[in-house]
Amino acid sequence: MQPYLFLLFLPLITFLHLLPKIIKTKQSFNRPPGPHGLPFIGNLHQIDQSSIHTYLWNLTKTYGPIVSLRFGFKSAVVISSASLAKEILHTQDLVFCDRPLFISQRKMTYNGIDIAFSPYSQNWRDMRKIFNLHLFSPKRLQSSRFIREDELSSVIKTIRDRALSSEKINLSELMKNLMNNIMLRVCFGERYQYVYKKSKVFRLIDEVQAHMVDLYVSDIWPGLPFGGLVDRLMGKMNRLNKCYQDLDSFFQQLIDEHMIINKQKHKIYKEYENVIDVLLQLAEDNLFTLTHEHIKGLLMDILVPGTDTVAATVVWAMALLIKNPKAMKKAQEEVRKVIGMDGKLDEDHHLPRLTYLKAVIKETMRLYPPAPLLVPRETRKDAIVQGYEIKQKTLVYVNAWAIGRDPKSWDKPELFLPERFKGYCNDFDLIPFGAGRRICPGMSTGEMMVEVLVANLLYLFDWGLPKEEDIDFDTTPGITMHKKNHLYLLPQLYFDG
Image 1 (cartoon, helix red, strand yellow):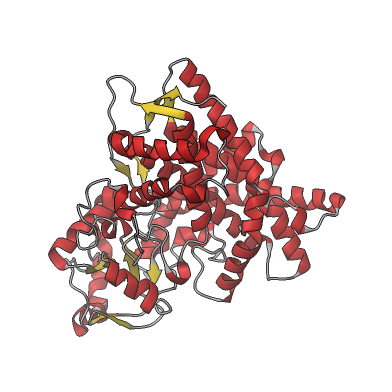
Image 2: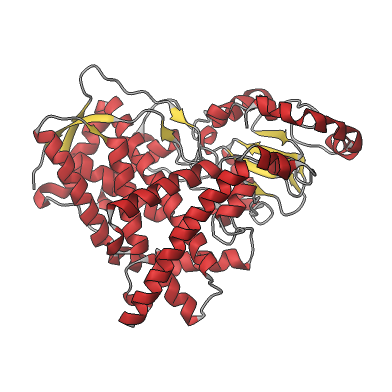
């Protein structure tokens, strides 16, 4: 939220006289250290929204690895060390495993009945079980391999054509479209490849992501009588409702179409290859409480992070390899030796042997984690962390980006050194997908997809920069850490199977 918007709220400063408990609470317990805020708005005016993870990282240089902040009436702490991350995500995981439901997230997740933003509850446990056992189990991933291979072959053909004509490619756009196509087919099946439907859902996904990081007056000052009115006057609620209605209508249309077709086919869900049919059959079997809203919430969880994080990580990996030619050479030599003259990557046979490539991916996610700030948690009850008191309903942010660059955990953290992961044992200093109960359920699938894509790019092509172009490493704000400027590369055909 931009600072100038607070001018709208100046009349509400009079509420200060009615809020002595807030001021008293601030001094009545041993909260973690942090910058002094202003009455009523807290630290909101100090936050650098363009690069919030680096702003929070800089605070640790003054206040240490646990920092206390206040956003309006909401208390928050930021965790920026591996030892504290272990305390929050493992030792006291049950205390810190809830999710706050902000206005936009509540709306887009059908009142928090998905996985990512659901409060810790039986519903969350059921949704996670559905995800792990029925949607993205090893057997299910195996059955959808042909989709990944088909879409990847189309992209490889595009790159090959550009290489033969010595044209550069926009790798950022290519990877984003590839992952969108894969996830749409996994979720909805073959018949949703039509261009107009794809462009519609891609636009909706982008809009949803923008709304998910937007804060509302009602979020920052819960219980304020005029909060909802201000949100409406600013047009925020209208834009949110329009996006929600478009997305809900799209999902409902798909559900209705699949229900009609499935009645005609009389299949059982084990034979289905797309997510929506599996969910509809599970709902019919009454194995779980699974309404259409639950199905839509799960589709949201799959489409939004599933299309974004993999594409972003592949782009960062290729940018880092281009910038570090020795690492590029070593990774290509390994991939080409392991795959040999087979001409095609085999996920089961080749990936386990690509140890240096896996180290490249880990090092990429250390420097540029898919989510620089993990999805915020919320305390279920009062807790003590390193002697500091953390009150119930406090927001907890884990800065994965800062932990990945902490010199206490990493030697020469600013350098790209995949070799550092030889014999590496994770102890919460690399947590790009979170940890504990709320770890990303799609972690294994996401890592596998990144490895498959990067391995194919390195096996089939040599890579360089177009003339007079260089690589920057600027980032864009958002849930996912994207490269600010698209990555343009010049491919040269190495292997033409």
